[in-house]
Amino acid sequence: MSFKSKLSQLNLEIDTHSSLSKNRSIVDGYSEIANRLNRVANTLTEEVNKKHLVEQLARHGGMPIDPEAEAFADVDKLFELLVNYQALWEELKEKSLQEENNCLYQLENGVKQKAKELSEFHDQSWQEWVILKRKDFTVPDLILENQRNVYKNESLYKNYKLTLESFNREYDDFSFKLDQYNRINNLVDKLIELHGQMNTDNLPESVQKFFNSVNNYKFSRPTLDLLTEEVFIWLKENNMLSKFMVTPNV
Picture 1: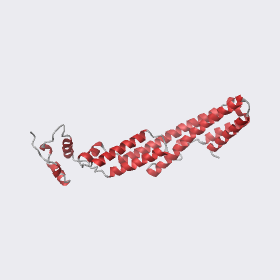
Picture 2: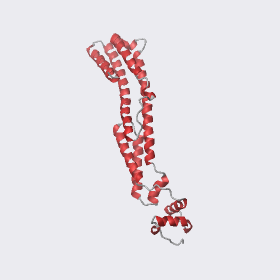
Picture 3: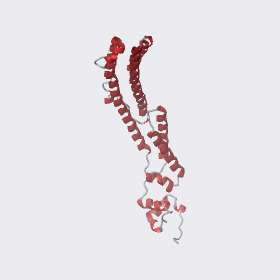
């Protein structure tokens, strides 16, 4: 029987005894025990749900979960703590709240500490996956600007920017919900696709300087001294000579 099943069974026994009791103080004791055990169950359920999501990361380029990871060590101790308290409950019922070894607190604290370790492991797994994915779609600012300013692909530039903004919003709000993960994964796929459509070549320094000046014409007009032989050849090879015209600087 799993930890969750044993915990549910114990809670069911407590609820049954509570419904049969006429003594208010005994009912209150049962209620406190049930509430504390429910918090234990909820804490573990949250981390189990995170683990299920983290397991999916391996299907989308992430690393498989290592069952020998330190976060999964000593899980058997939680079973031992639960069995100890279950035996105590069978013997003392509501008086188990006052027993000297404080087995219920030990169970709560054990689960709390293990949940903290699991949460850190799941967070790290998520961050590592995001780092891997960012490498697949991240574009240096200069290269991105060149899609618009050099290659005149305004729609690709805007589409990438908007998709990246959506990704960053979803990433900032991420709380291990499956629908959030699905949206983020779809955005990652779209960013990788857009990245693949870009011309990511680094321009020669003189060519980059030429385009920087051309695209900042509102603040400074480019002059012919920027049209070096290297720039002229590059424009010719890329069929861009006809995109520029010369006017007198008057």
